[in-house]
Structures are given as C-alpha cells and as structure tokens.
Image (cartoon, rainbow, N blue to C red; front, side, top):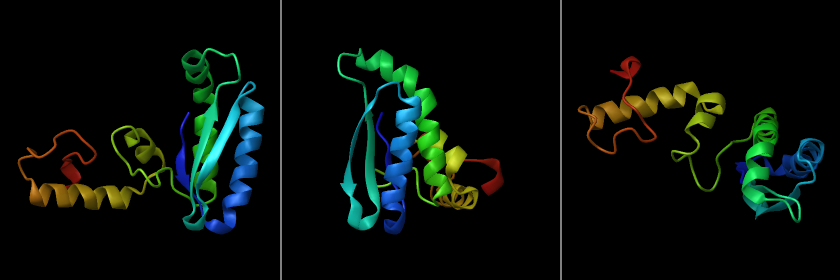
Length: 133
C-alpha cells in the first residue's frame, strides 16, 4: 500500500509515529517502508506485507482498514493525501473525501472555460460539472 502524503515538517515525526501505531494496530504484522523528502514534508509511507504473506491478497484485505486511517491522520494534521505524484485518476476518490471543494469548483470552472465541449482529456481528473457552467 503506497501512501504519497505530505504534512508540515514540524509534524513529520508525529505523523510517522502515529501512522506506525495505526499500522501496528490494524496491519496484521505489516512492515513499513518510510522514506521521502523530509525537507519539504513529503513522505512515502508504504505498508508492506509481512514476510511470507501472499502480498496481493494481504494488501487488499489490510488496505481497507489501514489506508483510511492513514489518510484520516494526514487530514487531522492538516496535510495532503497527495504530495509528490499529484492527484491523478487513482486518487480521485480521495479528492472527494479529503480535497478542497472550492478548489474542485475552480478547477471545473477553468476546464469549462478552456474546454467547453469537454473534448480534451475527457473523464480524467477534472470533469465538467453543472455548478461551474
């Protein structure tokens, strides 16, 4: 389970400590691979299957418990669920839960202004929506 998140530099140690506690509580023996760009608050908080576990099956089962807790912790610390790698299609559900609705509104307004027919990169990160037309 990959989590490319960011928190304030002053909260980095606290995030890693609390996030590690969450993984230890819900991760059923998971291992952590934590690295990143501590100088700018980005951290790759990756949860690995335990030694000998069937990785895909394990991660599917555990990610439903662990990932929401990690993202809730990031939100509690006023961080971002998306750091270095941006939003992308995979994180659209996270944007709905943790993103800024005002920012989404303005992104949609810009999309509608520059692409009123919705032909450029349709159905990707920014969708045309009625509230910004």
